[in-house]
Length: 310
Image (cartoon, rainbow, N blue to C red; front, side):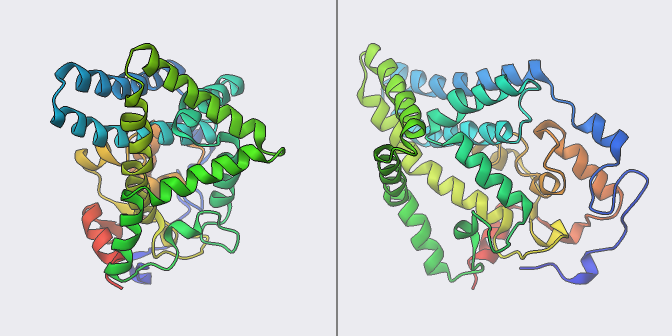
């Protein structure tokens, strides 16, 4: 899975990039600007898309509209989680209080993610990808793997096994005094969402179109995205050896890697760049000759086939 040395040209530093690929201070200052107003609209858009899908299913009222909504709500949880990831990096809003409140209560808790715990774990991930203390190692360690093993992992995700395990962990956290407050905040948020559905006379939609897609479709999407980011890679100071790069297309960006998440190599080169500017940083890396065409997978299917060919 690792790229050979001849596609890892040693061309850094340049006038615009440091030895690690990060932009030099004047360029980085420009790329690190956070557009607060646009991000307010983007956050609101998560809710418009999510509850809009449910409203459309109810308005149409056919079986296929509810099935379509079920799958689209798995994608909605990708929106919540990935924008919550942006807030975890303190890149959603310039004011820390606003960034963290929105990240917790409007993005992470609705999608059953412990924002502060996730931030700690995720920062450890960026500190030493694939290292001995890599917190996400269980998601992408050991690749490539046999196809049967890959299929079993996705089957567990699709059939509620992984989601049920996560919910049990949340229940245990609520029973422990040290984590009861955080778990209680997440549970309170879920009760509020249930309350909205109940007030509208459709409490069953919370289970079918909120919780169940999170326990199934989102779990599949999350695994597929995670292994496409780091599966089969290794520990290195050269991010080209820790992180894949995949050519982006509209379908993948819609379903699995919204908000420029697919420019993941650029994100790991400089995790302080807001999502809107990751394509610009990627272009800088290409222009410098540090990212070459041979590093790029043509699509996610090609990468998954390589990851499941062990």
